[in-house]
Amino acid sequence: MGLLPMLLLLLWPPPTRTRCPDFCSCKPDGALSCPDAGPGFTRLSLTYLPVKVIPSQAFRGLSDVLIIEISQSDSLERMEANAFDSLLNLSEILIQNTKNLVYIGPGAFTNLPRLKYLSICNTGIQKLPDVTKIFSAEFNFILEICDNLHITTIPGNAFQGMNNESATLKLYGNGFEEIQSHAFNGTTLISLDLKENKNLRKMHNDALRGATGPNVLDISSTKLEALPSYGLESVQVLIATSSYSLKKLPPREKFVSLLEATLTYPSHCCAFINLPTKDQNISLSIFENFSKQCESTARKPNNETLLTSWIPYHDLKLHMCKAEFISL
Ligand SMILES: *[C@@H]1O[C@H](CO)[C@@H](O)[C@H](O)[C@H]1NC(C)=O
Ligand SMILES: *[C@@H]1O[C@H](CO)[C@@H](O)[C@H](O)[C@H]1NC(C)=O
Ligand SMILES: *[C@@H]1O[C@H](CO)[C@@H](O)[C@H](O)[C@H]1NC(C)=O
Ligand SMILES: *[C@@H]1O[C@H](CO)[C@@H](O)[C@H](O)[C@H]1NC(C)=O
Ligand SMILES: *[C@@H]1O[C@H](CO)[C@@H](O)[C@H](O)[C@H]1NC(C)=O
Ligand SMILES: *[C@@H]1O[C@H](CO)[C@@H](O)[C@H](O)[C@H]1NC(C)=O
Image (cartoon, rainbow, N blue to C red; front, side):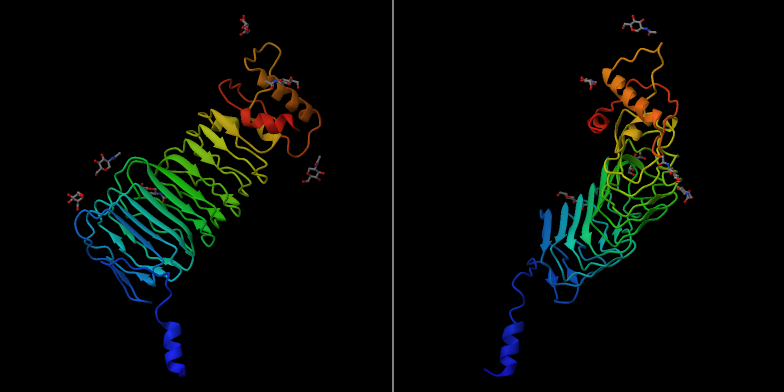
């Protein structure tokens, strides 16, 4: 066999794992185009795509599609502006395990009024994707940005225009180092999940300025050394397990809505209770044990001890503290 036929054999057929739906065109190393799938086509699942680019208007004409999923596609490198544009029925976009996807153009997600769920996980992108032109009107919009190790910053106004109702932000496992001032400006947050952003050290004191909420804040397994002192008024549930750098909590008065706290250090827990005075009734026996522990810590003060005189707060559940506290 000559060299040329052998080369052709090696190159052809293309790697069997690449796939292209019948109604799409996937030019190898080119751009994807899925102009029309016919009426009633509701879920477009694109895996092992051979293309490099999702161009502008790639899905034009898929007016009935509810879900577009792009995953396991190592060839994919770029997603251009207006890639997802005016898909008026589209409810979910999932982009996952596309490790060579390094660029998502500004306005890649534009005018998607029914969008409820956008997930971008395990890609190579270096900037937080632009979600500010989505203009979803759905209640409890969920944005999931996870395992994108090359995104280092959440800039100001990053989620402005994403939706006009409440939202849940699941932003975990990324390369974030910093959250800038007004990052969440213009949002109504049910939950803000920042867990497992292992390099996250700095959250600007005004990061939550202009946001309503969040009701739930999770900063577990981050390197945050402090929480912003502004914007904690709505936090009902604070989760901060394995937050070993968090040596200091904002004053108790900042957490006017707090009902439940899961914390790392015993000293964190002490910050949330008032050492009972003799004439006070402590309704929960757990508080008595906390108090004992905090008193004993107070007697041997070290740099981690953060005892202050807090307003007693009998509704506060500190059950998660208890385990670590008691085991000390
Ligand atoms: C949304 O889907 C419905 C039914 O699947 C269809 O009748 C309608 O035309 C679609 N809406 C738009 C804006 O394309
Ligand atoms: C969000 O936008 C939709 C459509 O424009 C509108 O019907 C709805 O009232 C808006 N919601 C809020 C909270 O402004
Ligand atoms: C916050 O958002 C509002 C609009 O919602 C805008 O007018 C204002 O300039 C933003 N603030 C900053 C500091 O970016
Ligand atoms: C303390 O609790 C007891 C029994 O529940 C009650 O009779 C008493 O009035 C309480 N004292 C104060 C100061 O609340
Ligand atoms: C408080 O501590 C005592 C002794 O360590 C223990 O028996 C009791 O169960 C604890 N109470 C609570 C509510 O954890
Ligand atoms: C507290 O910190 C200071 C400097 O940060 C250090 O010199 C001192 O030894 C520490 N004290 C304790 C009890 O750890």
